[in-house]
Image 1 (cartoon, rainbow, N blue to C red):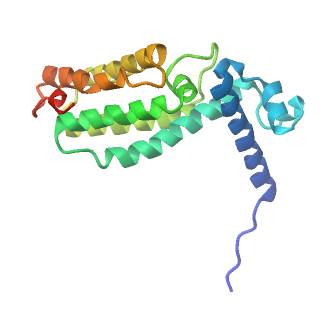
Image 2 (spheres, rainbow, N blue to C red):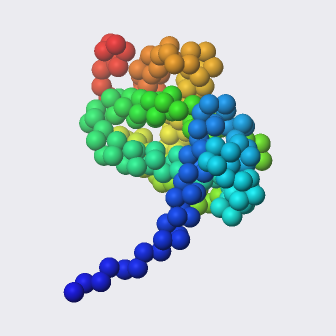
Image 3 (cartoon, rainbow, N blue to C red):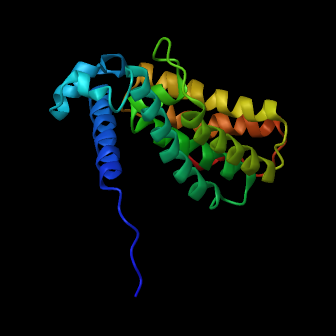
Length: 205
């Protein structure tokens, strides 16, 4: 007769409370902006006294840290699946990677800002929270390496071009597609510079 391991119900309740706190912080950030997250506001949202939060997070930045790690963990899981199913044509693969990150980013502006911009003065993610983003970058380098793009500077340029378009999208056409529509042209320009084969992506718009 097999015996199931004893459940640590106290640890389960503690983890559930931490998730509830983080979820409340995201709700505030998405509604009012990342800077609006406060211990008092989070506590009020989940029916807890502010001092009680300190038994789960020792500071507001600790909550941001959990949010940061959660966001990159979600994207890492998506990236692992996405990068495993890229188109074979190099230009199409580059465009697919750019669109995937673009779609993920515009779906949640607050999440994108925390993940990719220094939106919170004084906040630096912990090594543990930062680890999923490092894994994402490793996956990206591997995927681009399979396309023949091995120079780290070329990967940096790919990221800078996508990030620049995202910044313009958020600033000038939130909820629209003005800058999303530029992705094929931008990827074509990068592909031309890198001498990647294939017909221009722009002709398929």
